[in-house]
Length: 398
Image 1 (cartoon, rainbow, N blue to C red):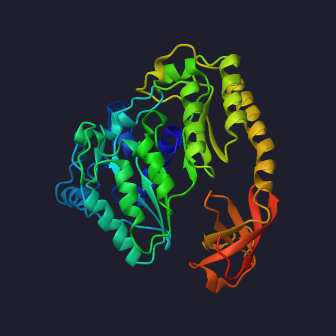
Image 2: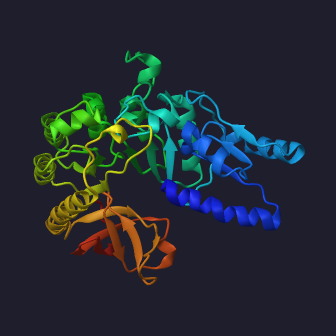
Image 3: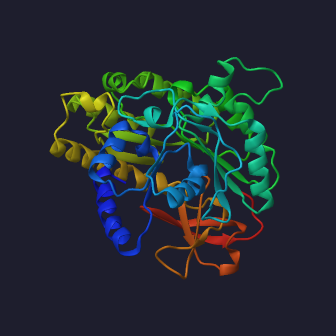
């Protein structure tokens, strides 16, 4: 949620408080920012509780203290706090779950506020992660996504980069262990950092049959000059070389990516470099973002901001290029058979079911509702820009 709409919602909550005597509590990354706390204090004095990402577990205590004292509660901890285990998690899906393996970030990309509001990298213990996934498997979950701001630096801060034999102290080792858990059928992860994508992780993807062959590899920009200003610590050539290495080791690998359009000082030549990478890699998915300023970041202080009109025109050009590649990419799926988890009814047609390929392509197909939650084989019969159409087939493995 953008800050403007965020504060607008607070104005609405004030009316509810005045009418019903409600307690207003605000939580999240933004609360870790000093200027946000000051703005709330000055402009929204009716807010009762402010708590950060490291004090989620203390909300009941904060509510109690507010009720008995009537004092405002500001419960913000040092952003480099400890990792808390055992907190309850509400999951909206019955078969797919996300599991956080680490918190914080050490990279300080110049456009990102995360290291300032979530602190340095802190990895969860492998035994806690594996225990959580084993419990999920027992509950019937089949697909797991491992989460972290930079998953392939898992345990690097704790081990100072020196792995020990027999210890699950690297991301590659963790992948091997998760792959062994019975009941789990698919493993994916987001987000890795290209500068930390080591050979052992590539080997783990190759040898772990459950790990998705769609790798999310954030590019952000195809211009080496802009990447340096972003503090990404790799070049355009480094990125393309990594893609080639992975394609050599993993012949069926596909890539998704993130791209920021209109970063400060981005010229037409810089943007053309981004388009060049998109043409060469032929991404399966692109998550495109128009650069948005974040107070407190290095990029926000850059005086050479790209005009909004230019940003939007470049965004449209990137979108047009990507959409021109989608049709060709989708054609290769026709006639192929995929073992998929039936997720539920199609959002656009209650008479159709939906699932996803191992490369995260949406498939819609006819079938009984009792197939929901089951793993079946589906053959792709036609392609459409944003989804594939399939049919259920029996007794065939991918």
